[in-house]
Length: 331
Ligand code: AKB
Image 1 (tube, rainbow, N blue to C red):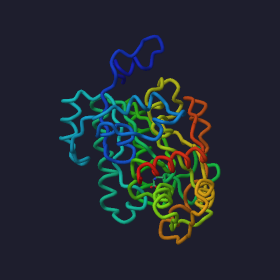
Image 2 (cartoon, rainbow, N blue to C red):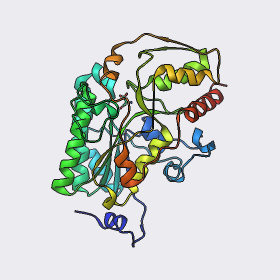
Image 3 (cartoon, rainbow, N blue to C red):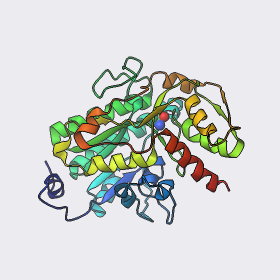
């Protein structure tokens, strides 16, 4: 089942007539603000960076209309989709791994009931739907380095469980109803002007703020905890690219996405190249147990082969961008 718009996207001979009308849930979160900043004139680090990518940038229009809506309110979402003639949806609302463990009931409602609403609406209105999955969709019995696309997925957090559910539901709706579902398993996302909210990988953002403000950071993960990470602009570009790509290129509906992997000690060493007096100490908390079950490196060779994924920002670039941006911010 494909709308005229989807058919036109899938054909190499027909040029897209109308741009998609996009609804982003979780529009004020790290990914939502990155994809479409709600305020005008926001300066993002990559806009000054040679690696910047025009596709992601052009999605970041200024002053996007923003509406309050509860993800659990099916009727309100339905009204917005119909009234605004929505054709694509990016579903970012979710409680992340650390905060999900502290409020399982809310995580279940937002991450699972919210997803059901979105999926049902996408099916009813023939929307192209992007849902991010995560490295957290793997668990202690998954291979960790590298972690393939297709392997054991028995996560130990409610966040992970809800994301495996989202992947399976999306694949099922695609098979059964032809839903144009697209999903990437994201690493920890690192951004300067948008804060992550309650994840296990958040240290890799906080460390930069503390480095600029205090020249010191107390890390809640052990120094040797290797995790996959990605710079926000690579991440936004990946999501846009997978949404825009010809569906015939997609040999599967859920792909691993890898960019860089590092440990807190390696990140601190890279920061020290710019700030020789930077100090890091380690005091692992409950997030260590979560991180210990997650992949260290994702195998994303299928994303690279099928739709041409390529990350552009490596660890040294990322450190430079974050420090540059935040030192202006705190001036
Ligand atoms: C988290 O740490 O929970 C998220 C993620 C890796 O999905 N950043």
